[in-house]
Amino acid sequence: GNSVTQMEGPVTLSEEAFLTINCTYTATGYPSLFWYVQYPGEGLQLLLKATKADDKGSNKGFEATYRKETTSFHLEKGSVQVSDSAVYFCALSRGSTLGRLYFGRGTQLTVWP
Amino acid sequence: DTGVSQDPRHKITKRGQNVTFRCDPISEHNRLYWYRQTLGQGPEFLTYFQNEAQLEKSRLLSDRFSAERPKGSFSTLEIQRTEQGDSAMYLCASSFLPGQAFRGTGELFFGEGSRLTVL
Image 1 (cartoon, rainbow over the protein chains, first blue to last red):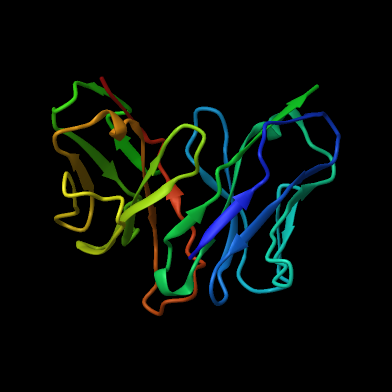
Image 2 (cartoon, rainbow over the protein chains, first blue to last red):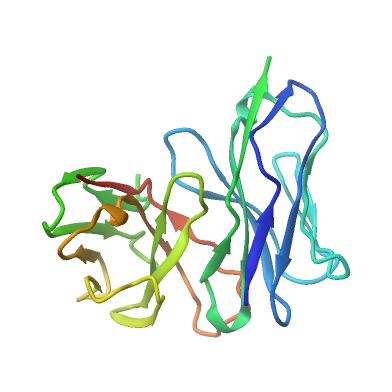
């Protein structure tokens, strides 16, 4: 079946620290991969995406590379800010069910000044 | 603001009662999705519509759940004879799928959710 496994949180970092949130997936064929973010009191919003192997998605200083050989899509940021504090969800979409997303459990990130 | 809106934001009900949630998608979006999220978990797919047609339902959507999108615009999700296990955040999302489908790249725009508490 289709599933996403994220590293468990919470993750607590100081401002300007390096961030990695691990995500691995199980899927048949070639899924598209996403990171969604949920800021406090807001709805989920797309952070970045990659639709094929070796693609790198990037946005707001965050990056993730679609690694088919390791079935991974780890989220990274070189220098986090307090405003990055949020819950981050890794997700996949299968081509045959366009738009239906399979989400990981989410990782809570707290950044301290 | 023309984002996805959901109503009500919070609903507290007694076990056995019926509840209905409404979702108004972004106006030009032809796809509408319902997800459920429980504490500490990621959202789980329930169902989705393309225009007014309900194209897929998850096995999570028991017979007590029904969703409609009668005119291809807003949607309702009704839960009959609520149970305590139905307590969750119900999320609505919408997207635009162009005429020629492409693989899984349609971004979903989520509402803030409707939180249901069943006592």
